[in-house]
Length: 380
View 1 (tube, rainbow, N blue to C red):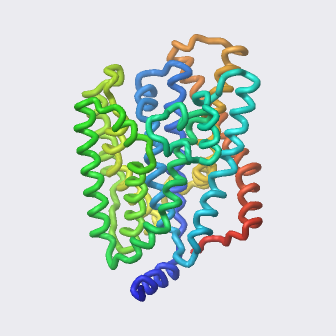
View 2: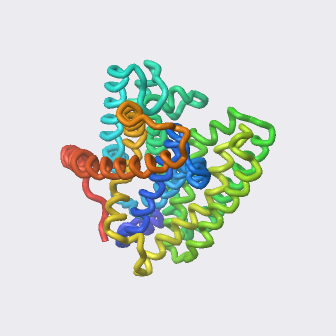
View 3: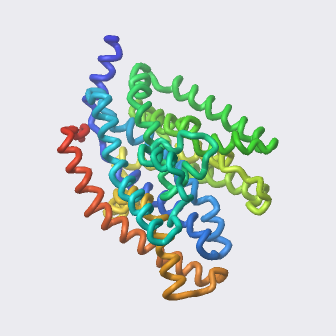
């Protein structure tokens, strides 16, 4: 126990260096998800359509990045209750506002803007952010504002994080622990391949959506933060991108979307090593003091607004499509018009997210942090 306390004391005294490039990365992940959802609204050119096919994997980037960022800034001196409360204040208010907006629109329009029609019990689970914890129920996990299933995953991560982070701090070196997590990923990857070959749809759906298997990505991100703190270096963004996209493109080439047997769980595990190394490479740029285009103020601000973008983009897409069809009806089958609509839609989403972040999300968060007496995390 004394060793753990010494390690915690040492960790608590380390400055939490701000990593603006990782903040910027969040907006690209959110925009990728937004492009993915436009595929249901209008046609795209072949290139943008392929980007949309894989764009939903931005969610996996969020999960791994979440583990990295939380471990990077973790303060062992903060009580578990305060840690979890702080994270809840981060995600819960905007979730509730979006859920209420979706329910009000359903009452007026008779159709949900961004997900399934929720069941009564499913809606209660949605309110409590427990709706993704029920395996095999897409009409529950993706009801109303369908993207909120990822917040249910994040809640699971937050509840587990203090216990896991303390375990990591017990390690004199994180490398053996990291290797064990990598071995677990390799086993999960192998299972996904076997399950895909045998069309085990229920099992693969569980891996793709449930917070338990998704927690592995969070763990890898947390291990990555400790690797950097303990001196490990990886400085190749180009190699990271190759590890992300080459296996994914090969899989998509050999298993076309039209075949109906392309599995999201396989795609998630394929990109996981590349995403982790990309996060470490980008973080290393900031740690070493190198200047990069990802540190631009506008990108960092958009990254700070990315949670608002993620939470509002699907709801706005539903409203945008209804308004467009009534005011300016065009053929949904025209790829050229589709890309014009995509650009217009993304510009609007960025503006909405910026306004929501500044005038709704931040004020509510600051009020609640003050109201509940949650102290600020360590700063550099």
